[in-house]
Image (cartoon, rainbow, N blue to C red; front, top):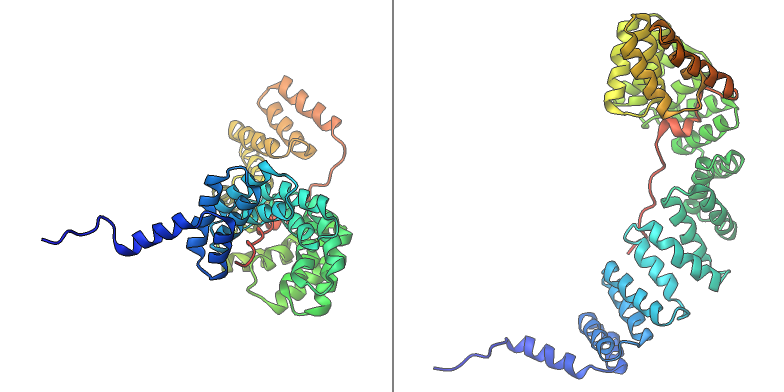
Length: 380
């Protein structure tokens, strides 16, 4: 009976080829022939034979990145840099490998080093800015993206990212300038009108912000959050009937919009429809646990109903969300007083006196979203 080999012939040939490919020249030759798997194995053989060969680890990282094996590539680049921290181009490649995995925090340091080594490297600066954005470090993002956008005026996506960074860093003049440039190119962009409105709101130009949101609602009436944003601007302008209509329209499109529910509940409370208000506010809290106005209004309604313990609990939650909001401390003090808890009431009233005057309105950007969307990994 004929004996069979313990390994298939193809695997045996592959192992033999890898055994022969023990030099960088062999690995490069395989790479040039487009035999990436064999080339990877060849570079791995080179690194095993010469574990202090930084260039070999860097070359291995390049091939692993081409195969979209970004975690392995990052490991190879890190080993290369541990041997030779000044190896050209490797910091940028390491940053890219982390960036493409969505590891924006891990990408920041290598991009910083790449930029320090080559201050005019526009790619490194742009990627550093976007990585800061991904980590919600918006001031740093805006600083770097502003330089990159100035050097690349035709890159609409880059200017849009800069505008969002400025908006979330509360650099509203910068955001407004960028969004207006975007609108010059695309006047029918509902998103751009909404973001322009948010920037105007941050600059306390509420009438102008309303105009932008009205335009956005006209251009794209089913755009997510457009009716909530317009309603919120009406609400802060005390135009409650118009605000109610917009919140109801938003909820017809998205019944689970917690902010719309909370602010509609606030309007119902102001109209003394307390049961309806409580239903809306409690539904809002079920959906989203960090809407301060919902807890304040629930506490206010429960206090009117003389349910003081529950009212205090709701108001305490509101204070935890924003300890520097004086009106909430005042309401809580009032509830403690009704409960004959004089000492706690005095503390709350003293806290009110300590706090500087502060607007009850947060900026619209933070009402509409907890954070802007994360940047997508670069095309592979």
